[in-house]
Image (cartoon, rainbow, N blue to C red; front, side):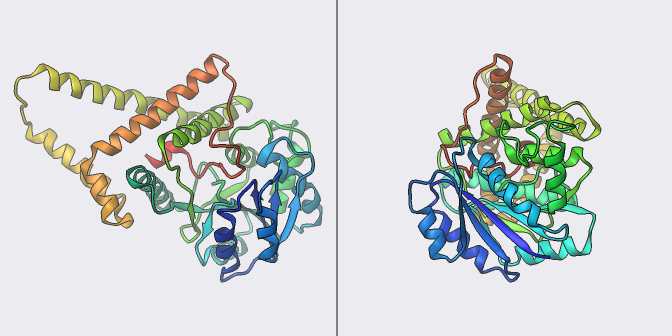
Length: 366
């Protein structure tokens, strides 16, 4: 089994060195590392060569990350054996030391597995907003561990694929799944990792995210960039579903989106009634039963982020900052639905970089 790592990068000179250092320090060394430089105008290519890895520069690509990866995969896939592995790693992601070793062991032990994704944790910094995102991500990872690695979405930060699975996707584009024939990634999708996951599941592929495959990924530094990132994720997920016919694999994704819609109604109603009550009564009345229920809810919030340390636990215990963060995500969900309903043009979001991929679906992380 050979491991070939593709790192799509557009002007990633600031983050690429840490990504390459973590990759080259793996206990299981990759056989090839290729930085896929797409329309770079900074020193991304020079940094890659200084780390003595291969560089592939896209030619005439106007389709961002998906287009750049399609170009390299068309050259690479015919040379891959079925037992080999292709990994796609974001240029802003740092692998934990044993990531590749754990992934290769799992693929060796289970030949039915077609793809493996990573469990992601947020980088340090960015104050309260950063901690809110870290708490969100650690809850998602905890949930996936409890589900023994079964995921709805392969994270765009770091995922491994068997060549046979990617070849099957390319061969079925425009036949049974959306996209252009012979393209692995659908260039029309806003969230290419989500779309590729749906394509793989539609073809019957088994995918997981093992607990030992962990990565540290980029966080959004402010509300504006966070809004753009999450809007792209949410709208991309809805558009990907709309492009596919209703099948048993896509039914689960539709059920997930309906679940998000229910949570939006439930949380907004709760906050509205809470505010209405506070404005309507002269004195608050304490009901021991509901106080106990609320206390259990707070305990669950704290326990679910226990691994994040005292900052994460303290934030969870205060409760309302996280509820307000959830309401922010609810607003993103509603905005995505309205944009699709009224036919508003989708924006790429989060800048022009190629690495603004989907770590995980927001409904899982709540």
